[in-house]
Length: 180
Image 1 (cartoon, rainbow, N blue to C red):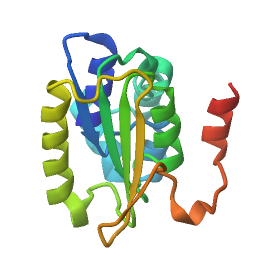
Image 2: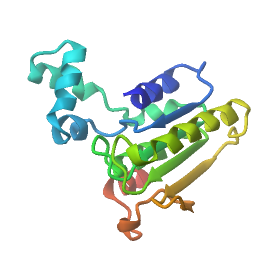
Image 3: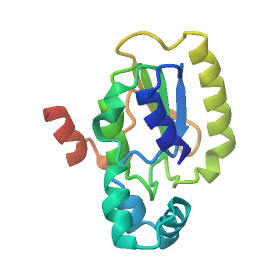
Image 4: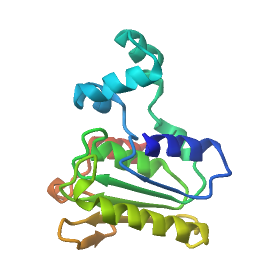
């Protein structure tokens, strides 16, 4: 949940100078709590001190989605996600990313799931180097929006983070955001 809490913190605390978040849960929370393996919800309920699932859903889960809060982020942001992340669907992650007005970058890793296991060493090294560069002012230009689709063989398709199997279509979550 560090990417989620990092996003929430960056939106509310101007002392944060940069945010690099991989596997950030930025979607609707139905995905993580209703569609992912039950242990995610059970563990979160335990950590939050809930034993009543209905109370958890009503009092906490319903209030967790970031929604438009990410519009308040002002520092440079790097998000990375696996193409098949089971906690936040890629469409939701990209729709949330598009709401961010700060300088931003997105990396989508082909054929990876939530733990990004196959690329973890590269991901976290890249993130650390990106943070260092962001703190040195490299990504401060207004309107910066850099997107990469990182193929399993290491190649990147630059300028897009859209999954190749989308075949140029725009998922509803993203289309709704762009219209509105």
